Image (cartoon, rainbow, N blue to C red; front, top):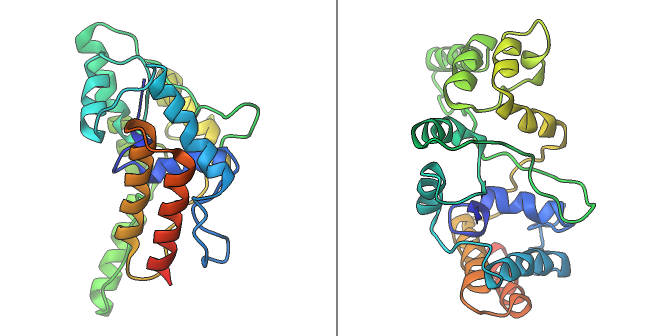
Length: 236
C-alpha cells in the first residue's frame, strides 16, 4: 500500500491521521506545536512498522499516485480529487477500483481533514469585489458541483446535493465510489495552519521528520520530539 500522507506534500491528510489517533499538530490556542506528543509519535510509529513489515511503499507523492493509477499497488490513501484519474486507470488496466473511508486506528473515530481547496477574495476595488463574489456564488452552486463532482469525483460542497431529489443523487447512485467520502463529511475537520511567517518551514520540518522515522531508520520518538522543538522555535 501507499499513503500520500506520510511523504512531503501530504501534510493535509497527515493531520487527519494524527487526529484519528488522538493527536494534534497544534494546540487549540495556536501557541504550542503538538506533533511531538505520545499520540503523534505512536501515529508515525504505526507507519514505521508497516514499512518495516514490507506493507508500505517508499515513493514520493507523484510516484505513489502514478503507481496506483497503473494498478501497481493495492491500496492508496489520497484525496478524492484524484478519483476520476483512478477510475480511468482501472478501466484502461482492467482492474477493479473500490473506495473506503479513511482507515481507523483500532476503535477510534476517524477524523478526516479537507485538502485545502477554497476560494479567496483579495480585491479591494468594489467592482472587482462584486465580480469575484458573483464567481464565488456560481462556483459553490449546485450547477458548478454537478460539473466538479461528476468530472473529477470531488465531493460536493453540501451533502444535500446528493440526497434524493438533489442534483447529484442519480450520479451518486450510479457511482457508489463517492459514498464513503460523503459518509465522512460530518466528521470532517479543517486543515490547521501554523501561526507566524514560517508556515512552510514548519510544514517541511514535520514532513522530513515523518519520512526519516518511517522510511530511513530514525527513532520515531526522538525524531518527532526534536522536530516539535524546532518547529516551536519557528512559531515563537
